Image (cartoon, rainbow over the protein chains, first blue to last red):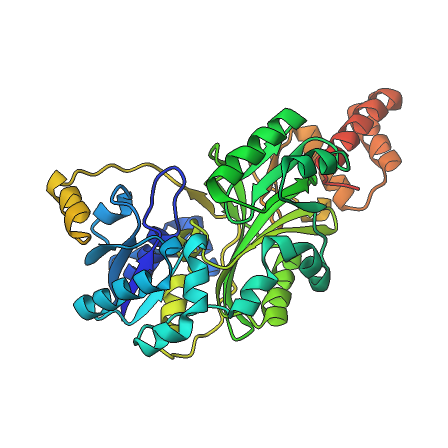
Length: 364
Length: 77
């Protein structure tokens, strides 16, 4: 399949696109080990990705020529896209052009900011011959951050006390109902911990200036943050992996993590996809505090660490493409527990001409 | 949570449902293993004071301190 993928940023705050692309370009082969290690590998069925590529051709959709993923020799072609804020007319014209040039058959969008457009105009895309695996707008809105307290209750889990704010006056008033520290977060991006009112106001302005309103003010709940990435099709959970982030960057992005076996988290994932009749990728962010699960966020897309799942044998991007192709997919929810994920930095050199060409021609 | 803890050869206790690890010394390991056998605090104190031939009061203080740490880390309620 010729698949377009967005989110090619691969810096300190990586987007999911490169993880999705790596999953699609690589096959699986058993890890070779010796002695006890070998027995363990065989028993647990640990796989690693190998160079035996699948037949997918990948097209990159970028919003910024500085995104490192553009130059990683992963994509056959890369196209600069108009910002989603310009509306669907511009967006559609660009996709029509890309369709004519490359024959793309499917798109895996990975960025929150563009998700609204893809959901709203999914049928238009379908008419253009571009398949997606996405929830409906109604399903998408059910898990919106501002709706989450009500939705968490429906799923039978807790949610930290959260207030929706549109002004600093409201922030000052509502912060008195909580105790510090608190979390100040945007409706789509960014979340900061504030230890006092000054910090809370500072974060309020920083986020609202960049991402607009509403701003969410949330209590901090104690416990361990755990995450789940999954893919569902028409309300059935087809694949997923639970993890714990062990170390994160200053922006809260995973640097090392470990696979976990948490039945409550898995049950929550099942309830979520069944309740919403979910279609497509998703990520659950949860805090486990003793017997209580707090649902913090549900992202309607792959997280940037999706390749972790591929590396432990659950290739979720591949699953999405197979579903877009109309193939039936065997559910895969068993993976080796206690596998450590480690990110690292890589460098590359590419002719400046490539960068210049992308800026001037909008494609590479 | 204590029943889930898997202790490896390096005395690292790992909770597979949450992905968190704890470094234990030999005594902590013994206490965790006794807890997993459903021994009460008093029973653990008695077992350790007999094994190491130490006054139970001294052992009681150390075991109580360790129990508090387990509570702080959410390993026991």
